[in-house]
Length: 105
Image 1 (tube, one colour):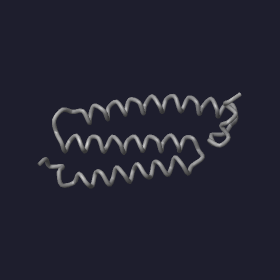
Image 2 (cartoon, helix red, strand yellow):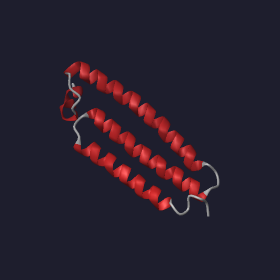
Image 3 (cartoon, helix red, strand yellow):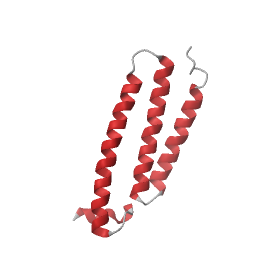
Image 4 (tube, helix red, strand yellow):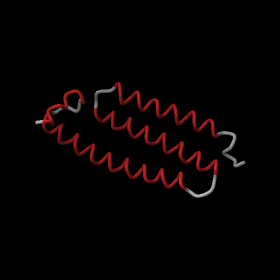
């Protein structure tokens, strides 16, 4: 058993807590910037869980590799999301998600 073996449950609980905070933040807040940060928090919770399980079970570094790809996707999501938010802010001077139906036209 690795050195992480006795505390894997702590990583799972922490990851679940971070994911829950991110999900609640995404569902409750209207500000799109806060929603993007909540999505980043959920992705980082998944990364923590992947790395902890991969560290526990050893073998190939598939957990770390998958976490690396999630980080790359999160960076691309942040860049595209911020670009959309910036263009919407220039159009309407607001970053509230419930007013974003103006992008349909």
